[in-house]
Length: 98
Image (cartoon, rainbow, N blue to C red; front, side, top):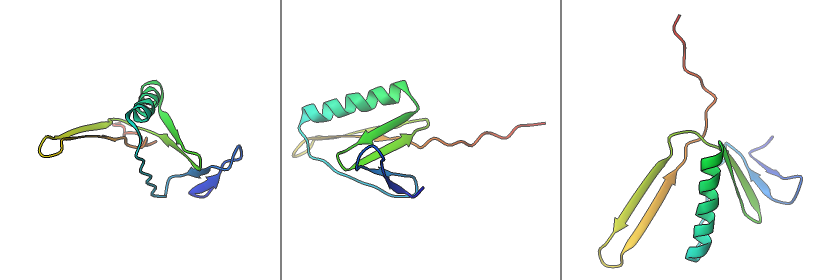
């Protein structure tokens, strides 16, 4: 399979490992809240998450630990930045001692 495929169920491009991908949105707070709740439920309930847009789908098997960064800039125009870094899951196992 290539690093991007078209899903058989629809016309979405599937984003695969081996490709860099970035998409930025400007949304109202309630839409972002809904997205974060859905993302949080997938993180809490499983080991994979899938982010979907009209044109693309990004399945991601994640590992631990997830890094959460909170950055508040209170000068001039106050701004709160919340960043989540989710590592990919690896199939590597630890060596054993004999």
